[in-house]
Length: 112
Length: 113
Image 1 (cartoon, rainbow over the protein chains, first blue to last red):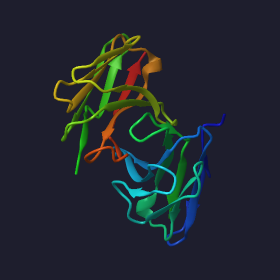
Image 2 (image 1 turned 45 degrees about the vertical axis):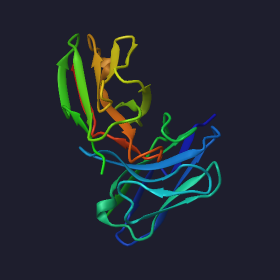
Image 3 (image 1 turned 90 degrees about the horizontal axis):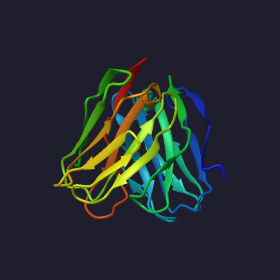
Image 4 (image 1 turned 120 degrees about the vertical axis):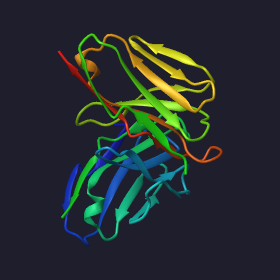
């Protein structure tokens, strides 16, 4: 079992470019999450999907969109990247909401 | 909105010393979770506490959930270099089972051998 797989691991964008971060889990989990991590800020929730077919905003949703493609996959899209979106992005999943999270290995994104 | 605060932000200890990190929520929590992130790695689940006043131990780690379910602590006895990393607490945000798991800012532990 791979657990939670995120791609890409690293990405450099220019301001205004768009990209999609992909996330897939093979644990039959119902809930999936996207967090960003910045120094001194901890992990901040961007969007989450409590179950297949639903998505909800987290603490810092502005500038992002998500798609719960199916039970396994949850993607995060930056339509027009800004330098403030330079961060490490983590995808996570859990069997149900508020149960323990399993994290992917992260995507380091730089926006120049 | 709900806030989860952790102190201290950083802690440097000599190997063998004890370490404690504290977590405080602005609202009552139905449960609290703790995670550890090694340098360059991803957060890994340690434990979940659910009951008021609950205390759980994992070898040298002791986790407590406050009576009012608004605070929690993680205590490490006799730290080792393998304890290095950032420790996060996390609790459900909003009312009910919304699925928003809100993390504290984390406490980064450095251990001098």
